[in-house]
Amino acid sequence: MYRERVKLWLARKLPMICANPDRVVEDGDKIIYCGDALGDLYAAMGAWF
Image 1 (tube, rainbow, N blue to C red):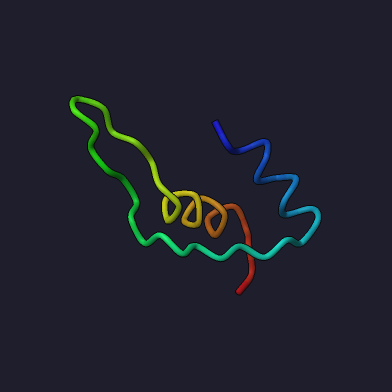
Image 2 (cartoon, rainbow, N blue to C red):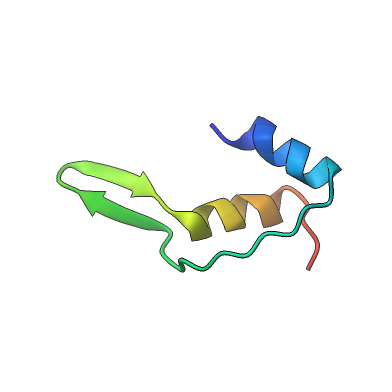
């Protein structure tokens, strides 16, 4: 869902700070992806550190 947006961030060389270390949380029977999951995707798609 975020891949196209992450490509834009990478093109603009935007830094990412993930203040929430959670990757997922449960809300009843739903799994909700959190900030660190997005950070993992950003790194996997080529973000530099």
